[in-house]
Image (tube, rainbow, N blue to C red; front, side, top):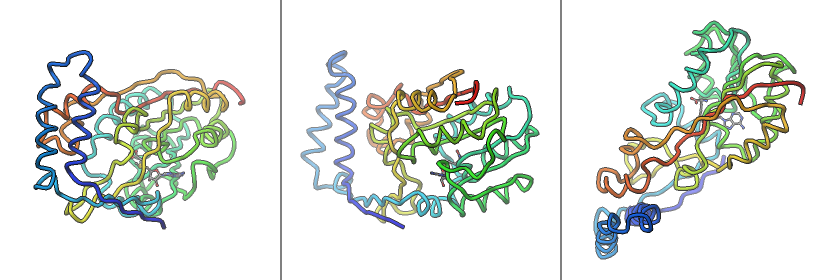
Length: 289
Ligand SMILES: C[S@@+](CC[C@H](N)C(=O)[O-])C[C@H]1O[C@@H](n2cnc3c(N)ncnc32)[C@H](O)[C@@H]1O
């Protein structure tokens, strides 16, 4: 178990949001950024006063420790899930029924949907606390502890794979895609969702879960950035062809949950509105890799 704590001051974060708002707009619409300059002056002048002086510990957990802490509240409100689920479930509804793998299944969100659609469902995850919730939620499914990089499944044994909001935690997509290509039958479908590289690169790399008291800290598991070319290269090497790619954007629901939105709604909107938030792929295995 590895934990690391760094302290950020609220004022530092607010300055960063105003800076992002500036870089996105200063050349195309300089006048619209004038209120940001005024706000930056004020934040700097009042940096040692509340709320800018608020010290917030950011507690970085490794994957298994983090999801063990997160598991009891994971199924609570989650803006990523609200954007992702209708798209993924729409894709799953179009697929013929067979054997389905929910890879990095967490608390069994997609395993439950796949089971409801009539698939024989296997779920794999590395965190026992998440698997315990999945087992209670989907008693008919077979949940196994395992890693994306070494799936505990036979070759050519599944027709459908889902893998949601987890690839951002693996340092290298290639071994995971090779495993998906290995266990998927020819003609089978993989539906993958992940944090968008634009989102992880602009602060979404430190995306935590709710904490009772912000002054005690915001816990998080780091979200790594995979560029679109990293996904495409890994798909190609694994014999997975792209059927479609969808990039849900920051809309009102996500913006309102951006830290600092309540205090600086205009800056938050100028900084984040319209940026891609998630990346969703529908893939098909066309033949042996
Ligand atoms: C954000 S949760 C997503 C859970 C579920 N797929 C969903 O979308 O609701 C990420 C999950 O990925 C799992 N995970 C992360 N890295 C993994 C790996 N290398 N192998 C297996 N599971 C992994 C974590 O344990 C956690 O349950």
